[in-house]
Image (cartoon, rainbow, N blue to C red; front, side, top):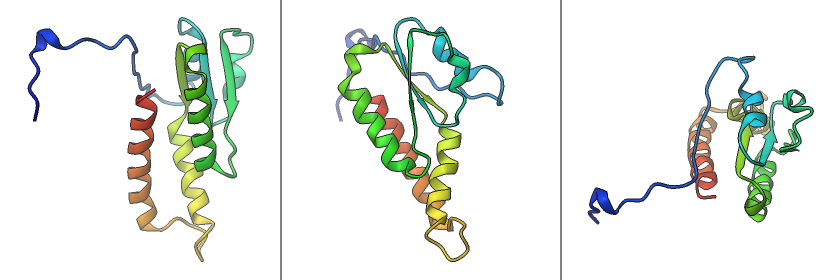
Length: 134
């Protein structure tokens, strides 16, 4: 285990922010108000509120293949990281629902199994860590 003195720790120039709020409180609109250029992944179909913001580019998730689609978005964001000041995922709650819905397609009942919820927890943790590395 390494010990680092506080005077030697430098702050990142990148902010990592997670916004949590009720629907309709303006989370998506925040993407258009951020300084610089923003790349948005529209998961819940609410990007129409960004109409007219020329500082925003929007990619839309493929709801039939949410897992593959979010990985494609990561690759897109990583390949274009120098063109954007902000990467904005809107929103993880809807992504969870799409992901579980897809898992349910492989069961007799059409509903996700208990193990899928544990898998989702691990998947989301890895997803956040992966995007955090950008």
